[in-house]
Image: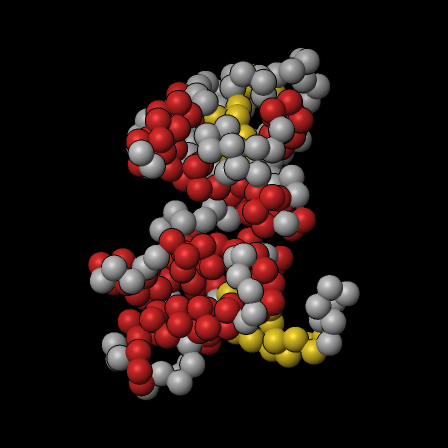
Length: 252
């Protein structure tokens, strides 16, 4: 049995998660656990944080996280879940270290394995911070309320928001609530998510020219990572209104 947990690659994790989907074992709760860890600073958290952020009590984080690790591990190894002693190493590396003011004392920290994080990105379950905040070259003086964007390049999810100033102006005007589902990430994740939101171009960059100037009030909207991914599940992207209607239909 291969206990070198760091040896598994991105495609290995994608295959494992896909297999769990096909078996009906990939639940919203299990996906949400990984999203919570992915969004944590350095993709690192401790069990009490996971339990708190998931809205559980006691030490349910250990049980659920370990179970998910065993399910993924069983697919990676091609064995039965019952043959695995522990599951978390398939999801994270771990170490004991001193906690912080909120969680004092020695704590065991889980850090998501890079291949698993990359697999979640590739499967469009999450969007990397690098994609959301790609650095851009300096621009010259800009006319009021407009920002130059639009050199031709393929855009996937949130990968090429051209001008950070346009992003900040959009959030300053629209706020940080998702324009599709009205979610407030800070309300769900706590202070770690303060001000965190993606920005979506209502007109795809592939359709605009080199010298196009974006108006952040009319051309951009804030959207949560999940809704942003869903908007781009189709080419051309769904409109905000179309995705909102699909959500309503799914919950009737």
